[in-house]
Length: 406
Image 1: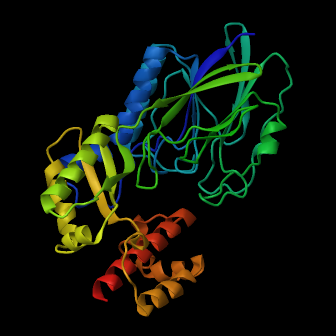
Image 2 (image 1 turned 90 degrees about the horizontal axis):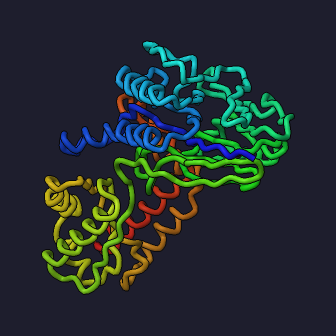
Image 3 (image 1 turned 45 degrees about the vertical axis):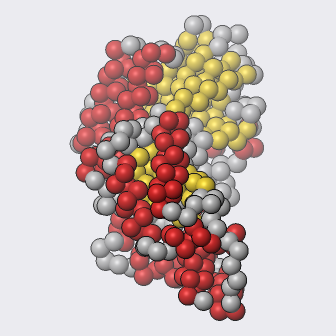
């Protein structure tokens, strides 16, 4: 049986604006805002070097339905490069770049096949092996109905069947639920590979057949930590091999910095510098959160001698001219329950009340921000995970403030 090789890619989000980075120096901000384009170039260069049989891109090529001129131009140039090397591309549009958007249209070269709003099946023949690729594009942003029934079941036992689906696992509310599906629904189609998009976390939902999210090619904010990229897939009947290829131009992550026995500021800066250099040597450029661990009373007293914003500003200053660039987003101290300090009834009462708030109450607490006339349009809907992060950070902040005053 002939094996084929293809790249499974999704969620490029070319032209992502990277909001909320106004305090960053201009040269670093430009690097961040160019990172999706840099990741895309790494993808194209890898395809030219490796020459897979074809590429599949499962939605959200662009970050918005208005598709910036620059993003479209960069993508069109990439497709032209692949066409020069006779590498076919099959793509569909997702909720961010749906077909109903308004944009200046580019004509793609003949190697690119774009799936339209009705699910279709396309045949490609590779070294005497028939391969059927099925997919669809979003007509509009909010596609709540399931599309699984529109995919034809496999009918030729010797052919390979690949499904492209930009959507959500039914019942998973960690992300906006679009084009929901269940694993059993996909398995029952008897396809050889399901290429998924929409969820930015790389994951394999099922092995036989493979039901796979490749994740996005470049992190866009603090909740998308770690390396990003795509899957290089070797597929034959009954067997698939997946190799992850990293494309991230910038890595988002958290660094733990040990502060054990630190009592002087210069010792603290040396520890921070060592932690950042370890990250730089492993990953290159990055957006990092520094978490201070193993804090004792002496270290805490030293840090409380100046506002944390000042410590953060000085750390950023030490990194400003170094390459690859590292931008320190924040410095936090691990939860205060690890510090041997007595807390009064006031602290416990406040934390007890806060601990009983449910998600709806937290939504009401942050509602003022979303009702602000200027800022609200720039803010995405918070996920359950983000609400949990707010709870944890609020608890740590209250512990710090109250313990410091008791």
